[in-house]
Image (cartoon, rainbow, N blue to C red; front, side, top):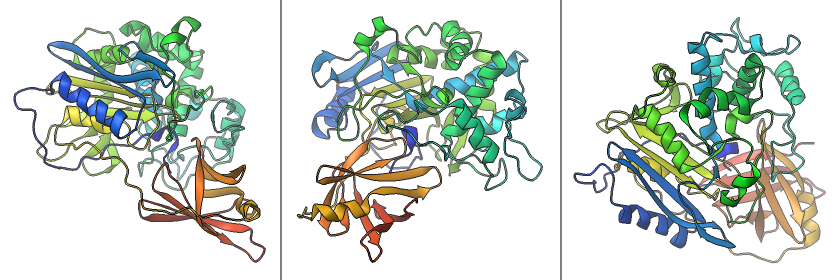
Length: 464
């Protein structure tokens, strides 16, 4: 099961591949062939747009369509949900507000929340703004009281009151700052706290501090009606259309929509190709460095730096929602940048394409290899004993439901997918290499769900 917003910190494996000779980027034809393979052969997207920038200017390469029923090609002005790339913008707002003297990195986040909200502390230390930006606050990936009415748009009904209730009742499992744990909750809380400090909503906050100063005219949380004709339709892991995601409370974690052209403008400013009042704050983002849970990988304010031995290091962030994948990265030493956006939330997204274009030693991912399974007939009455919600980890559950004579599984923050029986209590998925076995009591009611993915099994007890 993939995490909500699907951020995957890129860990570089030094795998030798053919180099790009004397060019910093391969020719358009080579990049387009990668997209054709990813879309037409591997069926991992409906449409992908790649943007490149270096000292010679910009290039846009795309393949695919705006939607399955809309053959219009995508381009640099096509709008996508960018998911966790939003976190970089939230962190830039933080760095800019620090520069302006409005906040400090080591300010307690509680300072900017209502007085009756009890933010958890541990061993005399409080959660600070920099702890949230670097995913080292000790807060979980998502709040445990996130119980969406519809998994098609899982964050839309999560309220500020629920956020405050969660914080006031949560106990940190480890010391603040002691360990990296990617947290949508943490950066969503950061965006909320900064908006509270400024006295505006998150969209106004990021627009005032970042989007307007950089001239990013096609990046917003809320899409105006006259933009909707260029908003790509998103698709889930089975290339079925999901709902668009909205994050009113945790907007700082993943609410922005943008285009390749706008994000290349953002990268250009980070590379110093354009003058910007945000340049000092952008530099400050990279001066902070904390371990990010893998060798050679660190995190600053939002940006992740991958520095494999004897290879070019690069700075990036990726993300996704229920129907989209995104990657933004750059190499400041060679002054090159890459943006890749896709309108599908499939197992093989676009992060490997972006990393490969920045460092050709990073291999492209093959399509997921699924084990051979044989579907059998099963008594439909047996299925009802498996219905319920199972907790893999705190805040990350899998709900088993029934659609006609078929079981479905739906993880927190993700779309539902079908399960197919290969035994009385054994099921498999076709969308990914997932196998589920139910452990039952004497009445046939499941008490535990054992989920195996890529050879790793996790047991999840049923939640009463």
